[in-house]
Image 1 (cartoon, rainbow, N blue to C red):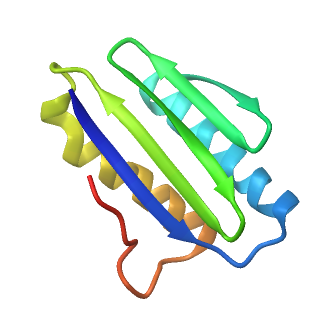
Image 2: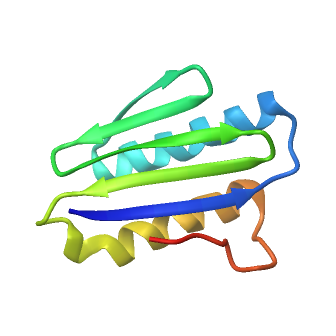
Image 3: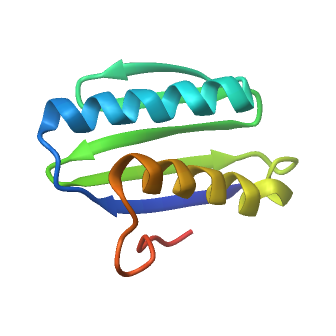
Length: 101
């Protein structure tokens, strides 16, 4: 299994950040046929071959995704798409989106 871990700082109020995460989830759901649901300040997403969380932790968005063996070869494009949505909603980070994966 391959993992994607992204941390992205933001400066928005909690309600605004949550609304932006919701928009990101809608884009990802539409593009990748992913189901998602909120549980407190974290959004869980799932589909065959991938599951994960988008957490709102203070002034940071934390994305954690676990890809199946078959989707692992698409890790790069999937991660790039998530980062693009984060940059569009929250603005690019000066350090390039600091994340490990």
